[in-house]
View 1 (cartoon, rainbow, N blue to C red):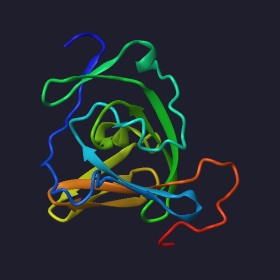
View 2 (cartoon, rainbow, N blue to C red; view 1 turned 180 degrees about the vertical axis):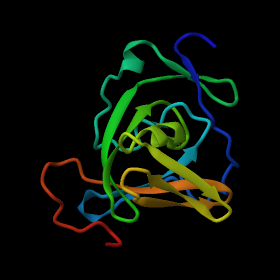
View 3 (cartoon, one colour; view 1 turned 30 degrees about the vertical axis):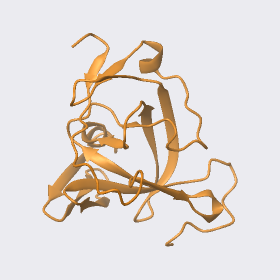
Length: 174
């Protein structure tokens, strides 16, 4: 691999054509958007398509400025186009932020290595099981569950509207 290329895992079963991209759903009343990102232990960085959340601008990143590229499981070379920093809530209501590097990928990938490194000085554990999994913050003890859907581990998040003002509508399901 060249200096600026990182391996990026894209292995998953081709979904039955239930919907065009089952990882992203429509924007709900009040501007909330539901995303299901793949928990990927083989990805070096969290990556998503730049059009996933068009309400958040793609900003230049260190990787895009340096010409960084990713190598997919099929050997394709994919350019880093920048990054998006999203204000989100997990399915269980935890407000946080997630940074996705922008690249021409088919679904959002959450790098388990980045998740383990986040969460304070002690970091976090990511545990996978037959029925799903969880992220456990070693500093606070907080546990964030994620699902296993048709063999793929998915972390559900709600992307907040990017305005500085709170939405007049509550997040769907709250």
